Image (spheres, rainbow, N blue to C red):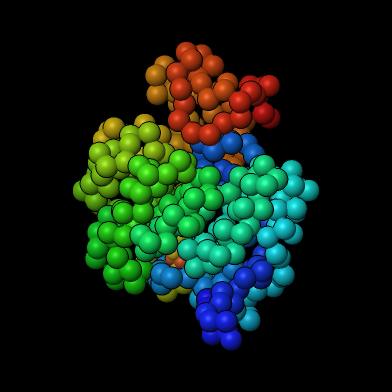
Length: 309
Ligand code: SF4
């Protein structure tokens, strides 16, 4: 949110947070970025999209005064992350695109302290503004909300192409680690054809190594469609894997298979998860412990135990 000042237009939410919370990085979701680590999450208020199914609608639709509960300058946020032994700070809840100045300063402060920065974003940003934000970001989970312009226009008050452009930019022109989330909404974006087309686009235009998370929708805000059946989410995962994506996950449903990371070379379960908790990590310096194949992502140089339970 911006307001006019004597110096020009200023970000009115700078230094104000709608809440700070320590989460497992798996909750963002990021499954290939320092698995098992904690992340300090924060956001502000407002959004540049208007999703009718927004799970955080009370934040994304809020005006500045009614939701920003705490003062938190970039130094205070980075310092809190250090105190809480977090590996990273996440800009989330609403979208860092609309509080970029605040996110950038916080990311720079994190860098000075050897902390990583994560953007959880819809990727709806003008090309000219991308590099300012993403040059200081280490990982992003980007919502690819659907694969039709109709969905974006009707349910998000936005457009599909800018999101596809942002994804291509991130994957091909930056070192940012990227994972994608698609919330499946019955009757809106869950057809076999659409899931197949979305998966094929990721494979051909990005990489088959980009992790894709299908998650189940629950009715929220203005949209009243029924909740997504678990079978729909599992079916989407099967389709995406058949299209050649190597790391496809399910979310918001109980599904051990859909939470597991398999080595693309030997099939070993290199990461086992239960909910947001990592129970087994068999990756050493970014390689499968069994066969030595590289596992795409960002991992600690050395891990000391295979069993994290
Ligand atoms: S982009 Fe995210 S935060 Fe913004 S309205 Fe849509 S779902 Fe809500």
